[in-house]
Image (cartoon, rainbow, N blue to C red; front, side):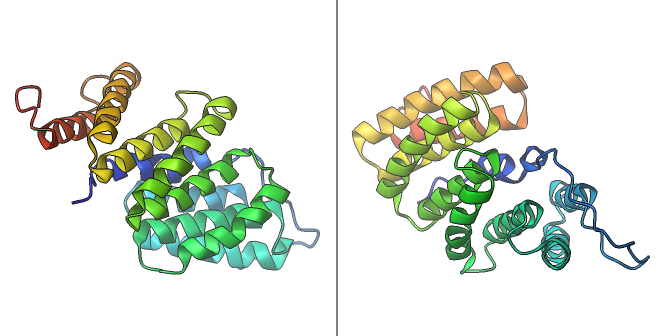
Amino acid sequence: MKFLLSTFLLLLASLGPGTAPAAEAKETTKPAADTAPDISQKAYDAAMALHDAGKDAGAEQAFRTLVEARTQALGAEARETLLARAALIRMEIYRGRDTTAASRMQALLPLLQRVLGAEDRETLICQRRLVYATWDQGRYAETEKACRSQLLTDTRVLGPEDAETLGTRMLLALALFNQMKREKLEEAERELHQFLAIHERLHGAEGKETLSVRYNLAALLLKQDNYEAA
């Protein structure tokens, strides 16, 4: 059985408001008509707000509209267009409604690396979404290897307690847990103990993230027949 509850943390880090960069979309040279679609950062933030409110179908449609508008106004490979495309594909992966989403993210990644940079936050987020897709497909050993590699970059570029870095660590713990080998379970337990301490400090003992980690740690202890600790 998959260890699913901590997916909440993975998606929160991947799709939360922190993913939007500060740069504003370029202004078009022609005066915009009253009915012209909004291609600004404000439109991006509004689409993200729909996701944060749990209105994922509306968020997906808003991102799709934004991609079309930015492509027409700015070009398919403009920075602002690529950011909207990446957000749309992440939303599609999140909702699990499009089986081609992961392959389209894989195709988009080289563009992000070239235009945004290999160590840009958005690029790293998309890389982790691809790693998450391998976990979702049950390829746990592959997920573990990819997480260990990405964790080095996340820690160096973003910092050890950035939401993205913590998301990668949680994904590593999930990959270790689901391999169901003794040494992997022991490492996953150590990771979750450390993870719990970080979240208690950052979010408090009763924060949603903290409670999610505590629940998963208890589930892992049960899996190891450590009933008293669980």
